[in-house]
Length: 184
View (cartoon, one colour):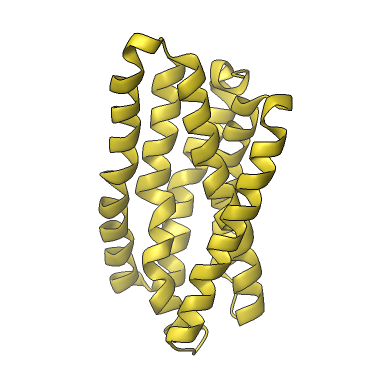
């Protein structure tokens, strides 16, 4: 059940949380009234957050209950995405993306670590292939989905719709998945 929970979190994150990256060019031009340089800063901000949080997770990994942080991130990420959807200035967008990039990489880092340490060695390759599939196959589908939403409803609304899909999932994971929350 723990492994299914971890793969489910990764799948839902890939499908509804990662598509934000697809919207960066539109965000840069339509919302921030910028250009390709603005888009580059948005992409870089997410990358900076990912590197910072990855280093933090790596340094505190053995001292924390990883499942608790993963479960909390499933609630935190959609809230951050909603806040981001209301940003209209370059600086606030960049700052939010540093945090969002960090939370996303933390979720994938924690998921990967939990799978690696909680699966029997003879099944590790098979389980990791499902984990990898949940990321690499669902991310493009999520990008297609959020792009379609942005086309019909606008970029900020598309982010809000995905966040409203993620919030009940995150609350469910936090409240009812005790095994994940207690996983080390």
